[in-house]
Length: 244
Ligand code: GLP
Image 1 (cartoon, rainbow, N blue to C red):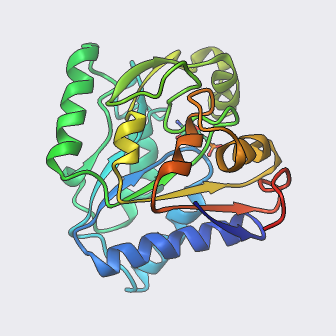
Image 2: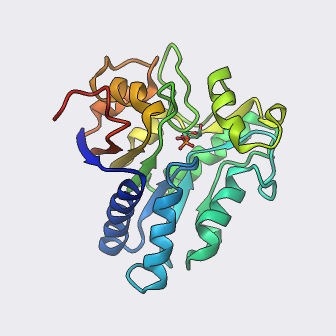
C-alpha cells in the first residue's frame, strides 16, 4: 500500500483527480470503478473542470459504481445513480449507456446481483477503482462481517452506517436499510485501487485499514494485500497512524 499524505480535502481532491485523469489520458477506454459519498465529490468537480478546459475527456470511458440502495429507483434524489448523474456524468462527455450502477429498483436479489457481476466481468474488470471508506472500515457497502464477500451481494446496513448516512437524508427514517454492493473480491480484481479519506472521523478506519490485521471485521484491511493500492489521506484522517 502506498500512502500519500495531503493537507486537506481540496488537496486530496486534486491529487485523486490527477490520478484518475492520468489513467484516462493513458487509456482513453478505461473502465473506472466509481464511488459515492461526500469524499469523492471534490475529485469529480476537479475532473469536470479539467474536462471543460480540454485536458481530459471521457467519451470512451465506461464506469461501474460500487453500490446502490435497495428499493430506490435511479430518479430518486437519494439514489446513488442520481448522485452520479448530478455530481459527475451530466457534466462530462461520457456516454450514459456506458455508466453502470447496481439496479436498486430490482427486487429480485439473485438477479440484481448476478447480472451486475456478469457486467463487470464481461467488461474485463476495473482498471482503476476509486474508494471512500466508512467509519467502520466498510468499502462500498461491505460491512464488517465474519468473511470477506466475493461478488455483488445484498447487505443489511449496520446502525453506524445508517446513522452516518442519515445526514444526507431529510428524515433519518428514510435511509434505506439494505443495499446492493459490489463484493470485496470484485473490488480486489481492479488493477489499481485509490482510497480517498479525509477528516478525523475516518482516523480509526484508516489506521486499521493500513496498519491493522487483515480481517473481514475491517473490510478495507484486505487492501493491504492488493499489489497496486494507493491511499490518499489528509492529516486528520492519518492522525492515528505512525508518521511515515
Ligand atoms: C457510503 C458508501 C461508501 C462510502 C462511505 C463513506 O456508505 N457506500 O462507498 O465510501 O459511505 O462516505 P463519505 O465519503 O460520505 O464519508
